[in-house]
Length: 162
Ligand code: PNS
Image (tube, rainbow, N blue to C red; front, side, top):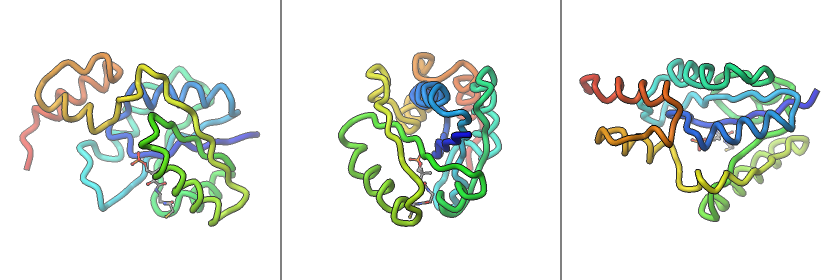
């Protein structure tokens, strides 16, 4: 069985991520969307909230599983028996960092391959950071994220922050 991992922060999942997940799930037998547990970042959604949103938006995709991981991606991939990493490329600006990541991951384990997919043109400008910026000022994000994520963002920005 071909198993691919789509790793990321997903803070929160956007239509850009969803496009890559859907297309990846057509190519691989199983796709594991895995949220990085990274204590150095300050996400607005907890790992559990991000996983729950991912589960909701992928619930109609039978070969997509949602999970989380910490530490090295290649170590996590071993525990899942996965040999492929799927990454979305939005623009040339993504290339340098992604090439670095793909190279280091291949150095760490030559059996692991990174597959790049060009993000659909309509999402080439889209990132979780942009979505958070727009949502923070109460502007319309309905064309950027699924309705459930839009609702979660509204609730999040209404919560009193520390
Ligand atoms: O959505 P993001 O924040 O761009 O995702 C980055 C991610 C999770 C793909 C990347 O940070 C990652 O793979 N982190 C795990 C640690 C690791 O294996 N790093 C590469 C070798 S140093």
